[in-house]
Image (cartoon, rainbow, N blue to C red):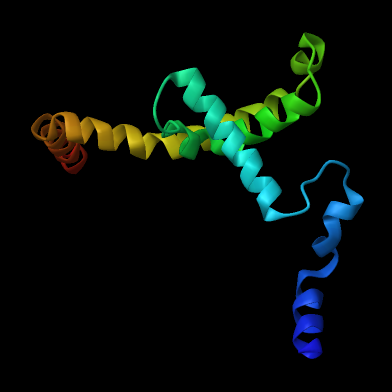
Length: 130
């Protein structure tokens, strides 16, 4: 049993005790679950929906860190304005890439015939010589 413990501990390497090195980092999964639950609760209250919005899946990679960071440190306008614009554009592009399949799915569900007709027209235009 000790050998298994050592093997698993070594596989995690230096990251296993990160909570001891970083202040205010939750030490257990329970703390993280409470953090996520608090965010879902806030979003339900903000939107008035019974469940957390589906956008949390698409935008969660930016919303969760922003919500946690803003609880720990209230940001000023000057701090927000000094953000790296190029990095922001990269994050924004990733978000759009995750959002686009959901948009297409919604368009298909709303009017499948029109969606398929437009798709077919685009395919025909691509196959025809210029």
